[in-house]
Image (tube, rainbow, N blue to C red; front, side, top):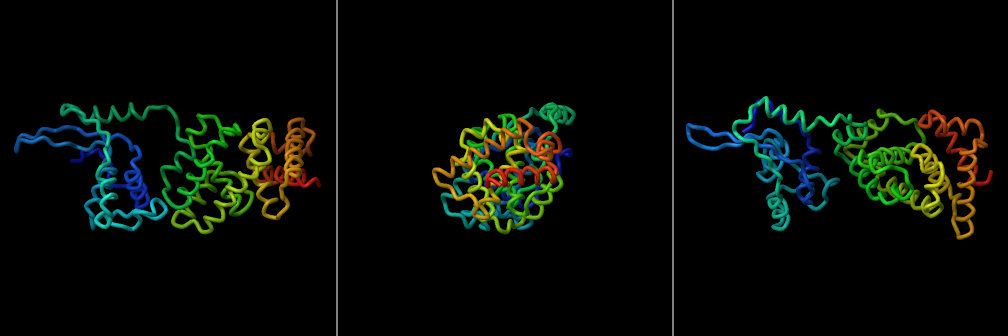
Amino acid sequence: MTPPFQRRQVWKAKAKSLFIDTIYRGLPVPVVFLRERTELSPLRTVYEVVDGQQRLSTILAYVGSDEQNPVEVLKIHNKQIAKKRFSALDEEQKKRILGFKFSVNILPSDTTDADVLDIFARLNATGTKLNSQELRNAAFFGDFKTTVYAAAYEQLDRWRRWKLFTNEQLARMNEVELTSELFMYLISGSQAKSPKAIDDTYKKYDDEFKGRDGILNGFRTTLDRIDELMGKDLETTVFSRPPLFYALFGSIADLQRHGSLVTTKSSTAKFRDKILEASRRIEEKSAPPNVVLATERRTTHKVSRDALIKFLTQSIRGN
């Protein structure tokens, strides 16, 4: 049963697909809240779903092959069971889904609607406003989002080693937002940072992320090259600040694209020294005035980003 204050179905196809993949992988999902009810005629105990309706209805629709509300797993979420009805899965795959255990909290029958609303108000009274990436995480489930999140998590050790983010910032998905911007740089070059621009990219590539493999490879190889050049030295530079790391990433990506960053043992040391020197000049404010200004204010504006990338690129080349 569903109480009158429960939300109607709002999950879209991609959200349902991701949820079935979560179940398939045996990953944790939020607790389901039920309220016990005793009916006298006929005498029976029923349970109202007060929170978790969409999770339960999604799994029931998938397992029951509901024709009116079909649930299909998308390839971007799980290639093994993509586009397969539950009835078409093999025995082991079915067991993985049917064996999933939900955590359930049962509220007693004397819990009123007002009590339920109060409980959820308290559960959600963290006082912490969702940031842009947390809101994005709840709104998108498609190809770009899936690729970016996997790529960001893949680099977790580097984010920590380079001191780019604190643990709190990692918990709030700051590294995912930066990864989104780095992908956008590889797609269309430097641009100003804005929530709308990032949202628009998620929307544009939600159904299909064309050029996905090439961009993902470019992202990985650029970070590999940064690690090769800087290693632990990066955390001692100004480029351990995300806005300036964006410029370092852009410069290295561009140099690689044009074949200007061929590394040998000797050239790697030379390039590292030039990056360290560029960092020192920025810190000591002996870099060109527009570069110093770009690091002190409006670091996410396109003009500032372009100035930093140009300065770094020329410094590394030795121009």
